[in-house]
Length: 296
Image (cartoon, rainbow, N blue to C red):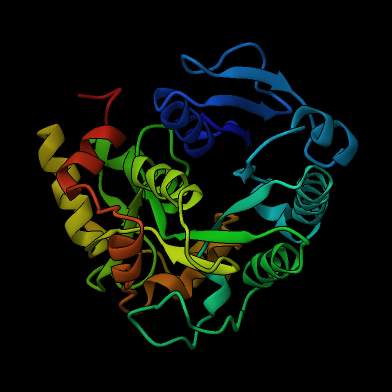
């Protein structure tokens, strides 16, 4: 049995803690808002990851710390750095390995597709730059670090462009708008598969200070919209893509910066994750069903 600390109680953090608890490990789930609620066999402790001293106290004798905390989206360039710094300092203080939940933004707009985990980071956005700096901070730590990089989320309670922009209209049977090229194939990561990859990384015996991609399913936004509507037995009266002018008028400024992710095919190569960590992607049907759990 090992002792693990999961920082961040969002959908991925909670599922990661749940999986670790089910394996019989001693698990602490901590965040500023975790309260007293936690998955079975998991202890919940309210704490702020920016407080390295407090996190070090909680993490004493931990084998690994999972950094799954999330900053407010439009404040990534400012709020994420104290979070990663506090987590790294805590891991160094107690000698725990560090497993960081990341994403694909750091590869930038000019990266070749399919994206491989050994590609150099070359961010072309503020958010991608923030993610890159976070990983650079982790990889410089005095403890081994791994980053698990996911694409856009599907899953229950997941907050993503799809859940925010398209899903409400699909549920109501209204005309549905999204961003980018609706027919460009895109990678979608299931929150449960993200958690499974994080947990598997803790057992990795190879060389650390590297990244793994979450095994994902590929579908165009149009296909995802249609398959989601079909599962709900809804008709989608029409599907279109927002123009930049519309996004500006609607205050979707954060989407404009990252819309390049959907303007051309974005494929993810996770073959090393499947081979070395033994994690495979769930079916797209399972991902959609879990996303719609409260509506089926």
